Image (cartoon, rainbow, N blue to C red; front, side, top):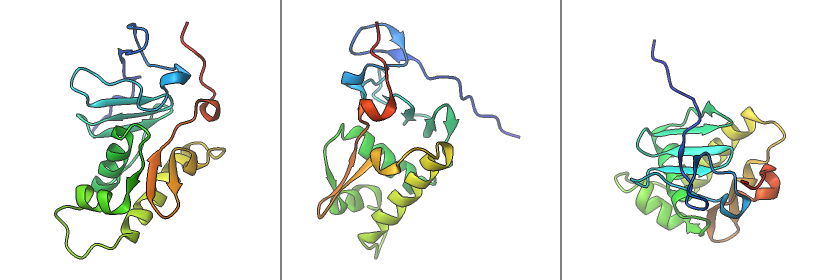
Length: 150
């Protein structure tokens, strides 16, 4: 049996310089990363690229390879809109015959996993749809109920 370490992932906050999980609402979207740029802390959602692990409220998300790659790409974009074509070119670069709706299906699966952990959550609040364009990793501080770091 394999165990997964789900302790809070700590890092040095780019806002205040302290070592903690960043909860500053001004930097809630992809606020901090570790020295290698492989840890993205968005409050309740933490994406660790080096370990290929995404946690929400400390619980691991059971993401498939493409789902993780999609979430990682969106989180690294720091709030910028990524088009379906860009996501297909980066996440599905090695696949043949992939339709643009494939992105939509994978986004829906990621949102469903987030909502299964917190039924009050609207998965569209984390991965926002920009109609006719693509998707944006969007974690509004008010939605998450984050308190500023003192």
